Length: 323
Image (cartoon, rainbow, N blue to C red):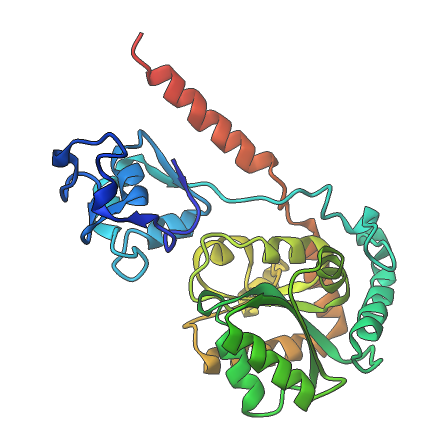
């Protein structure tokens, strides 16, 4: 069994027990019962031969009271059969060197062509034509999990730090309204598109200087993987798969030449603001910024490694079958 997001559990009335063909004895704490409901996810976790989730750090987090969504005790008991296998992306569909959606295809060898995508994105969204402005992008569901209320709090407080913001997403009406209002209050600096647009998602990855993912929890996250591929430095909360996929550009990482983005913790508006300021400081160092971009684009975010791990797991299960 592979768990993506433990928050979505599939809870149903115990009245469905007969329709499921389960005996009354199954509705117990050691069976499918979960706080008075039938817990489909709980049942899967209890009876699966192996449990995987989509990043090693998330596998550890869901075994804690803070991250376990009420299932941490069961997951701790099943820890010997639980492992995290990091997600990947389709690096053919998400390939800046052959992307039909962007204004200018680019690669590590042709990184200067990336600037044309920033200009095209600014023009499409009505942002000021300012090549020197640090352009942040957001491509996300607008829900509390994603921490975008923290970004709104920063936008409503001190001035956004000499930068631009492009938001694409939908979800909680209050968050949608908040970003629409922020864009109306700061035209040319903030743009917001409610909904999902595949072409625009590619254009934001190709044209933004940095991609924001301030999630309160994140099983893995795909947005930051695409950002790495496109040289848009991820600015992420230090949770779940964001921890596993982004190397914070702290002093040690910069000295070692291995940073790929910016992490922050704890997940608060104040620490997000600090991360934005750190990103702005790096942006003002073009040589350092370009080195981080190149590091990011060299990251292997494909399915090749994860697929090999899944294949090995499935082979081990087959080998354990009774003969």
